[in-house]
Image 1 (cartoon, rainbow, N blue to C red):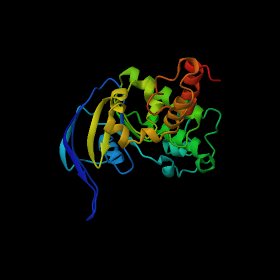
Image 2 (image 1 turned 120 degrees about the horizontal axis):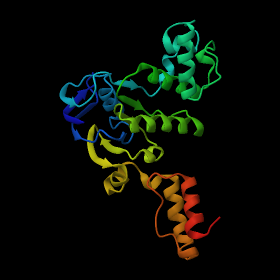
Image 3 (image 1 turned 180 degrees about the vertical axis):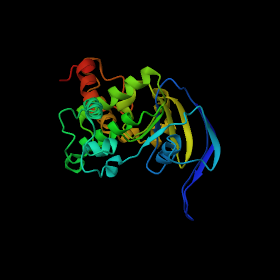
Image 4 (image 1 turned 135 degrees about the horizontal axis):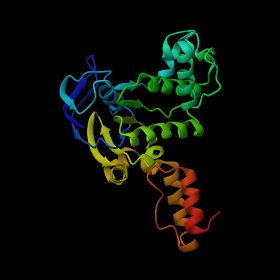
Length: 267
């Protein structure tokens, strides 16, 4: 897929401007859109998902039926029950109910009755329900804005399984804006890093995170796993051969614990 001179300016005298964005990336893996708050991630996701049209430039290779899942999709769940939120009918027919229950099972809401009010679900359950809406929409390309927000570990695992299956199927493209990029490493993503509305780096995730300017922009050294590693490396340098390698960029505390156990003999 190629973005050629894509730009968009939000209304108002101090409106944020994205672009121009010139990018070319692979179609066979998800894209992660990274950057600090206010970098333009949501604007780019809305353009990719078709919720906005660019003021200038063109997006080449995107399907005509892209879908955008916003940061807080659960706010749109205002139906009288789950069935109405999913298909617009309070009491759908039996075949439709079977399809809705299949979707609920896919997103980890199996057993939740279609008659339940969406507003009575937890925040994580409503986020799963919104993902179910995306599955039902049948769109080819997906743009998801921080889809892991409000999900617990089980819900996140379910999300990654859905995205992984879709990526492997080659059905369409996936774009994800996130601050928790380490969650998506198993999908071998291609990453775009934005700053002040312009791309500053693009490429495979590991290579992008290894660039010094990206490390500073994303404050990788301030992440808990990195700070713990730096502290312990100084104190345990002689234990079990030392700690020669840092944890993966963006790694979580659990990853550091595993590395300490494996490489330094520290339980």
